[in-house]
Amino acid sequence: MDPHLLRTFVAVARLASFSEAARELGYTQSAVSQHIAALEQDLGAPLLTRRPVTPTTAGERLLEHATPLLLRLDAARADVTRLATAPAYGLTLAASPTALGARVLAALPPVGVTVRVLARADVPAAVATGTADLGLVDGLAAPSDPLRLPDVAPLTTYGVSEEPAGVVLPASHPLAQRPGLHLGDLADARWIDAPDTGLPLAHLRAANGGHGFRGALRYDGTDVRTLTSLVAAGHGLALLPVSAGAGAPGTVTVTLAGPRVVHRVECVYAGVLSGAAEELAGALG
Image (tube, rainbow, N blue to C red):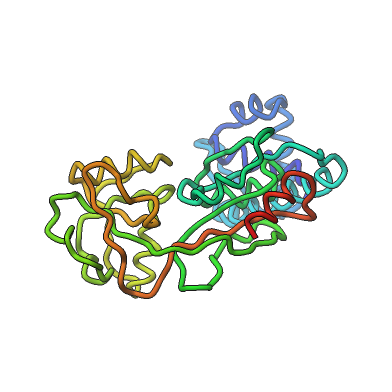
């Protein structure tokens, strides 16, 4: 399939409009219609209904393939460009919020660094497509087990750190004075669903056999202080690395005693590192 036609199809399906897709892509509406017609002829199936503009069953299936296919194409281009034009100095680091621990911050070069805080799922994609030189992503895992990252491109990963996870509770919570907490005992508690800041509730459910941990409130930001403030205000509990939760005003962080899992941070990169990226990766390895 011609990737130009595939990109046009994805834009039309996302915007539900041929004219809006034409504006976004810089084509005429006629050219967009021709792209879709050519793709439908190539695949031998209608991909979009026209009024309203929605994917057909075949179109829905193609969309499932299209995003990772286009991402891999972007990753391939970025990988080649990175080899040809990599600067000796300067570094863009993409990281999930709770991957930026004290050790990482202390290791950053004194000049020429751009830090981009992203949602966890966006970090590998940023590295794969060349918008970041290095990535730091974190999650909940068994001790020494690697994280499960999306398969967006051939990426190299290695563990940077592991530390205990802690349940962040309001200071007045009845369990705040416990020396440790078992995750299974909190499955029916009120939780804040903050997938890009706290450790995702899906990870907690997986550690608990797939049950419990329903969000009472959802927070779609990446600021840890906002998340702990929501906990302090009584909107629900959160799971954070102990170092991130400790000392947050109005809260107490109690170490997770069971199951045996840790907060793990991994460094992610593509191709061969050089310059400041190589130096930082070496310092964290």
